[in-house]
Amino acid sequence: MDSDAATLSPISSYSDALAAITQSKSVNEKIGLVHHEIRTHYPFIDRIAVAVYEEERDLLKTFVYSSDTPSPLQFYQVALSSSDSLSDIAAGGQARVVNDLSIFENNGKTHSERIGKGGYGAGYTVPFYNDGAFAGFIFLNSYLKNVFTEAVCHGLSPFVYLVGLLVLKETDLIKILFGSVSSALDISHHRDPETGAHLERMSRYARIIANELAPIYQLDDEYVEYIYRFAPLHDVGKIAVPDRILLKPGRPTPGEIEALDRAAGAGVVVCQGSRVGSGRSVRSPGLVRKGWVAADNLQPWKARILLALALTRTSDPGEIQRMFDSY
Image (cartoon, rainbow, N blue to C red; front, side):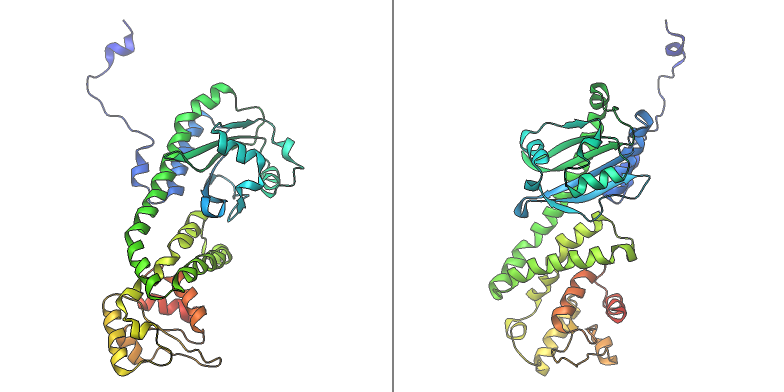
């Protein structure tokens, strides 16, 4: 009989290294924990990155990343159709191993060039799917060459699929949340035909601005993606504002101001601005009492962009006002 087996206690505790995943707040943190566990078995895995796919625009977008060094591909997006090799992987469903990444040095692709400049020697690319639909790629890289043997890839498989499931869980939660308010947004679209195109523009503007502000506020790809996806929700407040006010040109009447006050009391952030080129809207004591936000010298279309970004962080009028005062 094995002496170790003879001394085993019939009941004992075990500390699971991956148990902390259930306590982590962000996908980046979860992927970091998985990466740490991978390196206990395969210490040469120096980078894990996930790119998610947006089918409507055929875009691959960097989403989460884990490494000891800065990401060589942060806030990056590219059309999937622009890469024949990645398109083939997505369509075929087979992972790809490249044990010498130098073969891509002169292929003219920005992502290949940046990975090469990052010093990576080998790569393992795995597509993942959501109910059969292509959802993105999981990239594993090593600074060493010739490390992704068949045995290594087999051993990595459970971890790779765990990464895919963690990402899908997060993106599915986003879809569920967005779906829960889609009916309200549809109502807004019917009340104001311009709203649909406006929401799409706002999402794209919000992403551009977030990318520019990312180095200042230490935003990562995951956070910028959430800003892009949730920016359309800033218009849900229209439901609490009657059409006669929402679509009216010019200044509101006293009765209409009362309706806006009621909307603010219901939790809608009301922002006052001026369409006059040299006009300003200062947060007077009256606006403070109402809980309104003053756009200062920002014209309404600029104020709406900043408000969309602000609402991804908070719905507190005081905090949002501080953001308007800063910009």
